[in-house]
Amino acid sequence: MNDRLPQLQKQIIDFGNSAEFKELDAYYSQPSIFSALGVSRHENTHSNFIAWLLDPSSNHGLGDMPLRKFLEAFSLACALPHSRGKIPQDLISAITAGDYKLSAVTVEREKVLKDGSRVDIYLEGIIAFDRKEYPLKLAIENKVKSSEHDSQTKRYLEALRPPVSSPDIFLTPLSNRKYELLGAPECDSKDFIQLNYQYLADYIIEPCRDCLEEGGVKRYLTEYLLALGLPETRQTKGDFIMAISKEERALLARFWDKHKDLLTAVILSINEYVPLDDEESEVVAEAAKALEAAAQRNLTRYSWEHYTGGYSKSAQIPSCA
Image 1 (cartoon, rainbow, N blue to C red):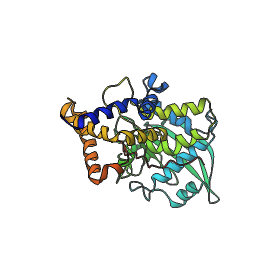
Image 2: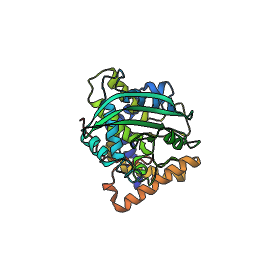
Image 3: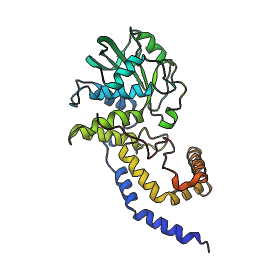
Image 4: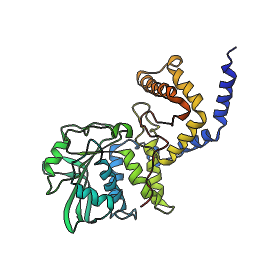
């Protein structure tokens, strides 16, 4: 008789009875209006929501806080290898210190440019720092499931040439692990600054949500974070996690710490005993390699890491400013 079986049996029973499993199951069972409508991976839905949030005149009651948080996330992106040196340092310093003023801000969806092309989100206004005013023009090309086509970013840049460097954004659901190692933006115009949805969640959505009283707008932001983390239930193929909230991160960390032995055994053996399609097999194989490498370093010290995102339990979330 295999001496390992009684121990494995106990682990399986403990798994189903554990508080961590129940917490995680309850979190993933939450209803989300985005998922109910089947739009949690629709590009236009995300562009509409982001444009609404960034517009100081919107009815969210947050004023220009979301836009200021967006500029902070943008300033952090400018320190990464793919963006370093693209924006004047005095602008980055002003944004980082919050030592600037915004005025005359307008936000448009599907802005038609002079060449006839349409940019997903276009923001225009005035940013004042160092006792001077500068035009702020920000174009956001948002990609959720598709890739760039027809050299969109190059055409946008030619049509949007401003008097000062423009913080044009290429927004994608790339994981932090891959995003922060990019050597260049994943778009045709390398003058764009790439931003990912995890930065959007960490530095914009969560700080804004955490500053709100209980009510409708806070609920909207909470549901949006839930939609970013939960695969859309109406789809069976090609879905993915766009970003995860700090609450989900904490739940997953506790879940992993409690059940890492059982989960490791499952991941390391599932490819051998369960028929998987090629895509699933590739994902499981990648996770197995990461776990095997971690086991060699000492598995007890291995912090949970989402295989597509690299979001570790030690990641820091900024507090509300």
